[in-house]
Length: 374
Image (cartoon, rainbow, N blue to C red; front, side, top):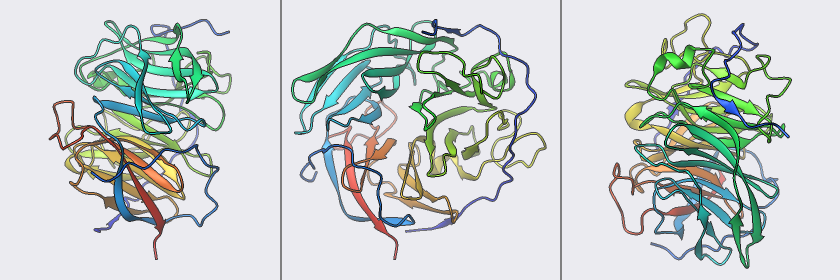
């Protein structure tokens, strides 16, 4: 496989002096091959860290999905999948069956908006969705089990009022190692919002699980954790607890950023590496036709970045800086990637939304194994 050098970048730290955000977004009051059988999530791998390389074939875990966007594996062995345009949460059971958990109320899918990121904490499911008026984060009680099936109860708004658009909605949500909920929010097609401290668009946000503003956020009284983003759709933490984010560029460069609290990543003043004082350059960058990055996962010393237009997975070894493309043009657009069972990785195709070329069985969750690179 072709190997590419990582882009050197100056990583700035420390908070920037920004004005407090306005209250426009409203928080809720705080209180194919045979299919492998999914198995419960294992403890963190004890094998040597990366670099790693794929080994063996690529198997199909499940197929026939309708514009899947986000995947969460549960300790029970089931997996939850958000389908963007239908606005439905689906369950992949440990036996490989698919069933609907339920429709998320209020989803108004259009363009790149709809039911986007999901996350599960204990018995609560969090969803980032596009409504008729905004993007918002909503929590739902999650009940059931992998035998009888899961269901969701009435929703509670966690954060509302995020500007929406036909594109640049962001939409990834994940709970970090600090127990806080992080969300990537796009600029909603209005680039100036990314540099506007009174807007939550074009930002990465950090909040409590109830929608409150943590006291130790970099800007007092603000959800903003970092700013100057165009359309970030992937976040992941490495073994050192560092936060990484993948971001769509406009016409020239897509980015991988190492996120520092309070830092400004430059959009729309800078796209890619610009070496402009006051803005943090990306750690790595790609031409937009080689990436258009979405989901991001960290496993065994390596970041794995799902790429849509690039139709590949990028593997970035964080301690050496090596960058390598996997599965180029083999499976179409890749929307998300997550650690799978038994040292494997799962990647989610996204060819059924009208932008990709459908292949037999699309859309699918695919599984492959990795081994240390000799």
